[in-house]
Image (tube, helix red, strand yellow):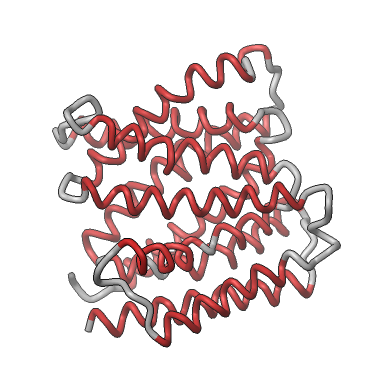
Length: 295
């Protein structure tokens, strides 16, 4: 991997902004659409740039190959379930809380990797990072101004959505030798297949008369936050590697909190700021341990 240049840091910041912007756009999308419809439209519009790239680069899509069951399983766990859970949860909680809750993904993946991989065991620095990060999340749940008995379950569902991303990432290791574009395109196809009957029977979106802002947000979520963001992630991974790309984890909750205030005027309490700092510090320690190991 080459040494990161100014352009690489700009692209990393852009990726963080795109992923962070998803949270307030999900909130706006919930004004008109149900969570299943949001999940379906995200994967439908998200598949367009990925599949077009595969077509122009002549990358074979193996969605219906002998490994179809892996693509289907990962499509459900890594796309369908978290997209639904996050949209369902964000309807009842502020989008800045969702950004902070979802930022626990690197911490959860470290815990899961300890038990399911041979080379990613806990060490002292990782343990400190995990404890600090999750302490921040526990502290966030004590903020009675933003999380109460009416939306407590919704906040937990967002956390569950972040865990789905982690499990999906572990499952992706089973097909890690395949091209990233092929894997992403294939799981998007299966996510669409899974969601078509669900959205048809549960929500019937064709009967909705959506607001313009909700429509624009859900298209943005698909084309930009899902499709283009994944392609941008591929570029960063290829040029700079996983350690560099993983630094996006620090920026997402920070940008998510700022953007939710700018666009939705969401409340930022002292406990939100303390939780945000704790999560970022926790991620820093976990990433520091990974970086030292890679040297």
